[in-house]
Amino acid sequence: MESQTIFSREIHPFKQAGGAIILLLIFQLLGLLFRGTAFFGEESVVFWEISMTILLAFMLFNSVMSIPYKNRGLYFRNSLISFVTIAVISGGLAQLLSGQSMDEAGSFKWLYFLFTFVYLVFISIVNAMRKIIEIAKKQDARLRGEL
Image 1: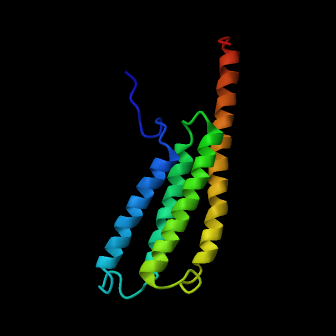
Image 2: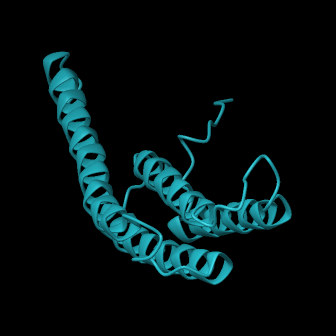
């Protein structure tokens, strides 16, 4: 019996996005509860920071979770939809809770812009690595006379 790790299972990007949104809501609510305490202070920029952290975590995990998927094109499309959905929801929630727009909160507009390109690079690198590994496996099998 072969054990399945989280990295060998095909977890749909929409399910990953749902998990990220649930985490976003939990941490944003914790931010509301602890607002004004010594832990957070009165800084409303913390809501933007939480949003960016969840978005970055989604980027990393979503890129790695693309490895076991056989239909890469479909995964890539659904991942982009998920990324945009999380970015819009997290940005809207941060603006609602902080009372500051993205421009007023600091450099978060540029971080969203940067994270979009970094995400595309991450997922492209992982897909390129997967393709290289597949080629190496075929070459190895051919050298051993299995093909």
